[in-house]
Image 1 (cartoon, rainbow, N blue to C red):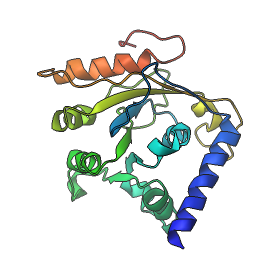
Image 2: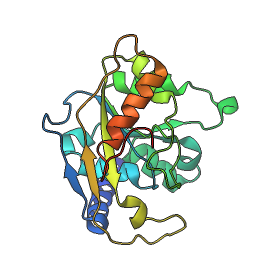
Image 3: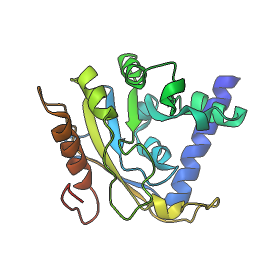
Length: 214
């Protein structure tokens, strides 16, 4: 019964997201990796990972798990059901002093178990005028722990206008999710160089792309 409910809720979320955003996916010429990978994206709305999850082909969606803050997804029974049962999120403690698990170990274990991850390297929603906030180092440490993992940049357009800060009811607008070609950590690559390369790859997918320094 639980499995049927979970499957039904997942289907409703997909249909709702598509109805509200008329979301369109743009794929790289070489396609998406068939093996577990990390989708890393810009972050401007609470619905970002839902949109990525929604547009993935079912065979990839079923193993894609968002990396999210446990404080939000464990605060109620409904949130726990959606986050843990429907999305199977990898829940990370925001408070370093209260963490009982290492976030990189959690993410690496999920990859080892055959899951792909949806990750937001900015670490928090970008409510500024900048296209991207500086990247946190988590994606670098994950790539160092699993150097063969494919890192797929994903740019989400318009979702921040569908769900502006403070709004509860979404505003119907067409959204686009653009996937780039997979990248990997280069052997011996410096952390700052790696983060800037990932950031530049993500910015290159945005409308009117600009240099990585913005």
